[in-house]
Image 1 (tube, one colour):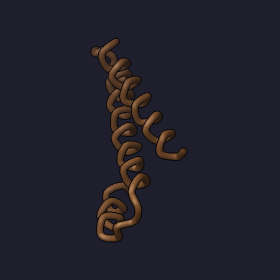
Image 2: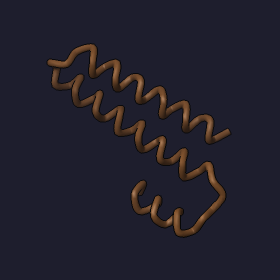
Image 3: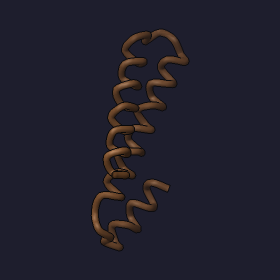
Image 4: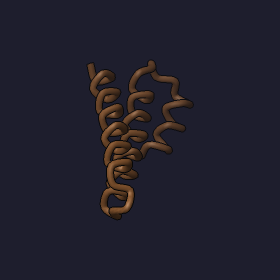
Length: 68
């Protein structure tokens, strides 16, 4: 269940970030929000990848260093 939520949030954030960024490319706040939303989508996708597999402790440690 949590994996579906993380993946959905990631896709929505990426779509919203791209939409805002392409809608108004001259406004500084639109650019900043678009980049922020896409970075949050990347982070959420990383959390999805982190949560989907059974624990492989070397992978868990490396992903924990990146995500946190």
